Image (cartoon, rainbow, N blue to C red; front, side, top):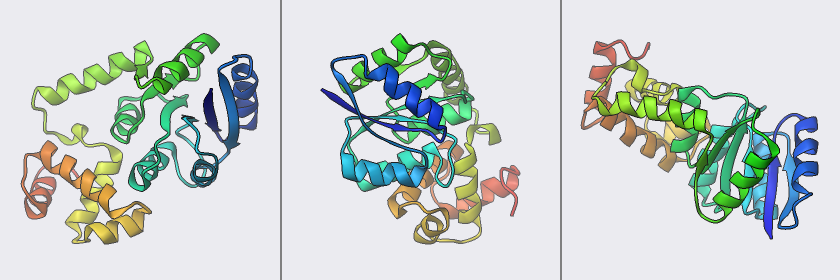
Length: 212
């Protein structure tokens, strides 16, 4: 039996998914949550196998929930189910640990298949999502080290690095674990081709990647 937690700020979406998934003998919805913080509390209490997670929610968005899950060691596998399919959001979610990414236009059979594939240890991205992700990765592999390479979250963290804040202080300000900030900083340094905070700050200011 695959135990599923539904996370979406729209009640009608949660109820629709629960009704759809309940038609399958091997799937069981064990709970739902309307906000990011509710999702984290439910994860602790219910210990689901799969989380169907929206990205746009009150308090913590889906990517922040993924980051918190990674930082606190939750083992549930996450499938993003959202109306948003921009390259930046896809990359943010995948980097933060999402194992699947579907748009809300997906059919019932696609959602059910994604749940089973991800529960079995695989990954599944909707074809249109895969195309956008590959396009973004191709630009990265071509050595583009411009502002477009950095995600919104990475720009935010880079700005705080440039202001001299420690990883701990940045984490406290953004409500993220210190080791999550350290992970982001490592990715930022790699993207910018720099070795430390001072070089990252100099590069960011030189290329107008951030505004202080």
